[in-house]
Length: 270
Ligand code: 13P
View (tube, helix red, strand yellow):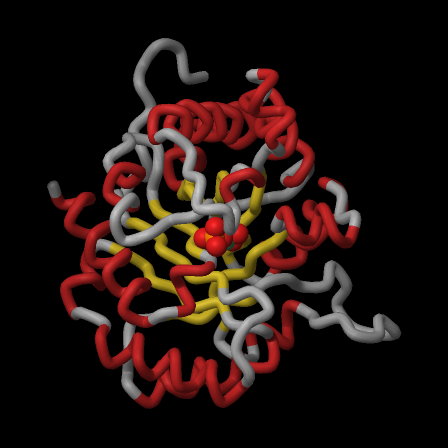
């Protein structure tokens, strides 16, 4: 158990900075954006951060081709997956289909899917388990709405989401990233105060420690997401339990996304 000993952020200290493009960019636009990011990517990022582009499914091949052609250290990830291996699931995308396109990461349980499509913690856990079985790192999204935040119940809410969204999931193959994304901060320009985000990130790590033990909890990467911009990312990275960022709107502009990665890497080195 953790006891009173402070639990350091992830073992090797590597950041994870991921750009969630959501339902933006056609195939052609996505290839162009990936190329712009690849052209601006700096070698020195690679020693500090894993940087992941997460386009819509339709652009995964195009983005992974850009990365492969440029021999870039950038990685590609997906926004969702099916919990099923194959079969009669019209419209769904299996984990095998994603690994065949070089996906190393996959977002699960984004609040837009929980809210708009009624995804439950159990649905998210089934998807995370399918990813782990293939060695893909799930980026499990959790976060409270404004009402929960105003009641001061964020930590309980988020910790329960972590427990439910990873219930029974073995994380030893793919590792794990948990993105704390307050719903009220997504796409609004509002950001969580870094000390609030740190408190939540710490509680997430403690919960992971009680589920998986200290070692796995130290390896986990806890991200902040919600209106991350070049000007605010450093304050989150400076928090001891925050190991990266899940970026939405600002990941759609190469200059902004690259500034976020650069500023995050500088903050991690500081
Ligand atoms: P914004 O950065 O646009 O607030 O989106 C955050 C998000 O939902 C990333 O998954």
